[in-house]
Length: 324
Image 1 (spheres, helix red, strand yellow):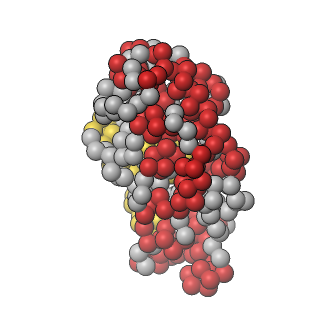
Image 2 (cartoon, rainbow, N blue to C red):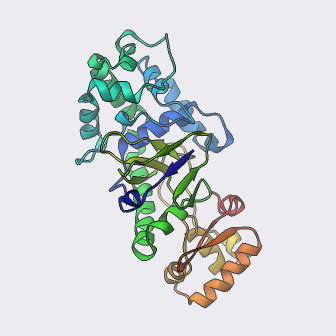
Image 3 (cartoon, rainbow, N blue to C red):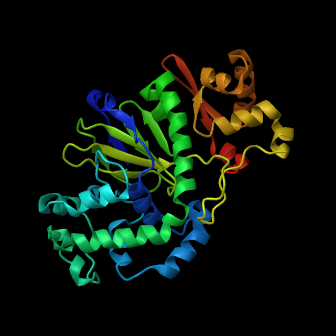
């Protein structure tokens, strides 16, 4: 998928203020239906959740199909954070917005009666939908929510530093390899097809624990396009979802690459500039340039220039070596 950003959009690019329970919910529903290698690390979680799904979950699975944009009304742009505020906003969705959001949804004649009218803009089923989302969150996400939120917060902190020091272009470039920024277009991998513009509403970047590929939530009214991207895992306690998080470079990796290069590889999991990498590792920019040259020649990182900054990010081989 391609998203074209105007100058007005670029002035409105921002990071989500915190982990969004509805973003995690819709992304997790897509993962629940995937069977590819990229989602295999969620197998244990997927097995546990499937055992507890109720009939109403079939509506959620229909709404959040893999490899397709998420209906905008399911991830509303609200001032107040938290699951309760988001669900309340969904319950207030009007008929016009509901019908517009579901105009491309496939026909499903097996939906329960309360959901059958949703594609036609019938809002009578929204209370049941909200309850289904609440029940699904309690089953699938609540058990490990706090540690998972900490993972998202760590990613946000690193992207915020990149935005502060190197600007919007550097943040967009740091989303590689799943998202490629070539002004004025974001090219998004992961199986989604199509092209759309942000229409001047801007773009919200939302790191998401339950994502193995970028997920797009289209603009709706004055609300911006939202890009849910896989958050980088940091060393942390278990999330309770049955998935190991990223480990810091261990002794074996340090022995292979050297301690500084192993640490650099871990930092570059979110992408950053030469100067930022030097600051994080406490070495000089000239020393970092030598280390990144070695990592690049080994095929572990890629390097691109964005105006006055030199930006580095992991290749698929680098991610695999780090244990992403």
